[in-house]
Length: 299
Image (cartoon, rainbow, N blue to C red; front, side, top):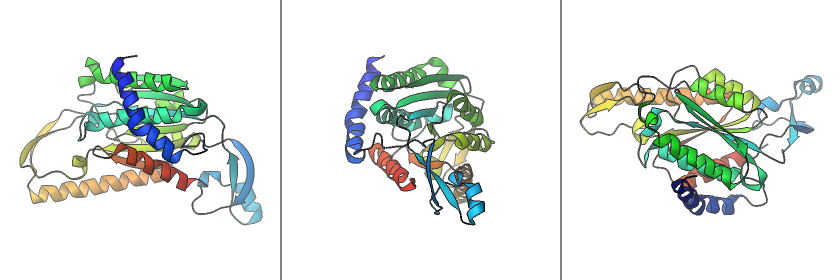
């Protein structure tokens, strides 16, 4: 393991993990919970319940909607799906790649405590690397080292130039790697080839899936800086645009709104928990909001 990875892990443990653990963990084994597999009871359905837990046989007999309740698994298995494609390299506050690294290490450290197992899938069109689930601080350090190694590798500088990320293949990779029901975090900007919705739905059918979409604020609101050359990080295509053109800005705003609406609908259809973190966000605050949202969604 590299010295840089160890220093990064220590910094994040001090700045984020300890503060979050102290504020939210309490008596729970972890701030996130797995979806247990042991059936314990039935109760009437409420609008906040996951429809996947509806017991249709009982519902048909009783003429009222019932959901199954499950006990929590004592040991949680979690997976981090990490998008290492070219589009992740840009952004404010150190870039999406930097935020992904910090967030992944914090999640690994939080989730690997108390005997929980954490694994990771590093994905790019040209390479995929799987770290099998293990427990403890050493596993978080191993993930930190792999983040540093894949970012520093010469092939990473331009490995996806001219191609768009196959997001469906990324999701299928973790579906193959995760042999038991798990909590899956997908950390990506979701910039890539269309048609990933089915793969996400299939993954969520078997696992508890949390999507964390990393976004550069400039992707949501193009700054007015005059004439600039804009390059597609995935394909390396370049165009000259006038960012002060009112018509262009309105068209881009409309396209952003349409994309955000489509992404939200796709996440809803797949029944996954979805969060959006911008590159200028405070990481501790973002994690606190994610955990609080997780608690609100619990039945």
